[in-house]
Length: 192
Image 1 (spheres, helix red, strand yellow):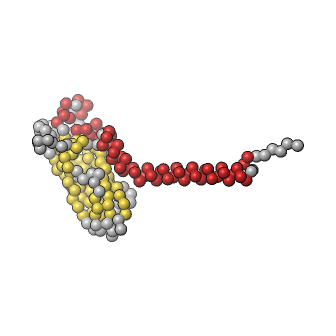
Image 2 (cartoon, helix red, strand yellow):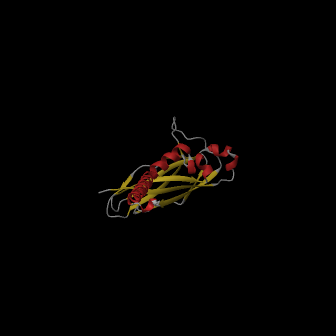
Image 3 (cartoon, helix red, strand yellow):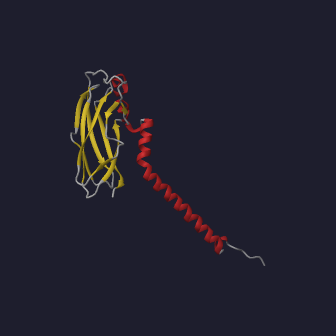
């Protein structure tokens, strides 16, 4: 007489199958946690390398001068967001600034630590419309720099920028009269 043995009814096989599943799930969870922890630095690196998402270019003048100023004006609007878990108040001091293309602009963002312990955060940014991002050039910025605020501490953070006059040569941007600079602050770590 032949016996039919079901693989799942054999105790040794069931145990190995469950162990493999648990180990696989734990590895997937560990990989997901690693991606979450590395998301801000990876996003920063990706945007800096590719210019994706309207990431601006850093202007470093060899002679210390900015390019020519055009008659065309651009309104630069400012936006601020905070990622979950960061107990800060974070807003632009002014909602917008109108500058001539090529003219240096200055804006400030205000951050306040509303918690009872020191908190470190870092900001990422983007520019919309995305197609204008390559022409929005920052001279000085607080992005991608760790900012540690003590309990109740507030700080005004400057952003110095200009819109590159080469924007006038791009026929796809003739209709652009407003650019939005948006920052999002993320928590970096819990400080003791």
